[in-house]
Length: 107
Image (cartoon, rainbow, N blue to C red; front, side, top):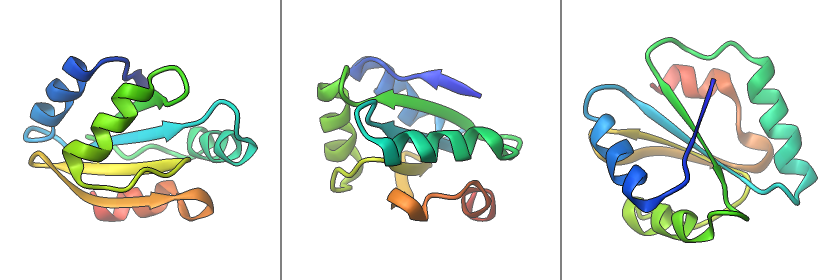
């Protein structure tokens, strides 16, 4: 399900991809138990067809995480999901409010 997001150049490609299909970016802190629980919840859910799911380890790739916040005008939180469509963040949510069902409805 996950495609690793590891560079700012890749983030630019993800933004371009969002013109072809919706893209979800999941910002995950490997040091946070809530983040681990939400990642597990997402992985146990049925992912909607036609959405690309990117995983960002924000501890390891802090500069990419900062660029996500800049590029899409969304204040950093962790865990956090962003739904990108047509180059813009059309939805973001954090912590316990992250649910696959909501991503499916909005996409």
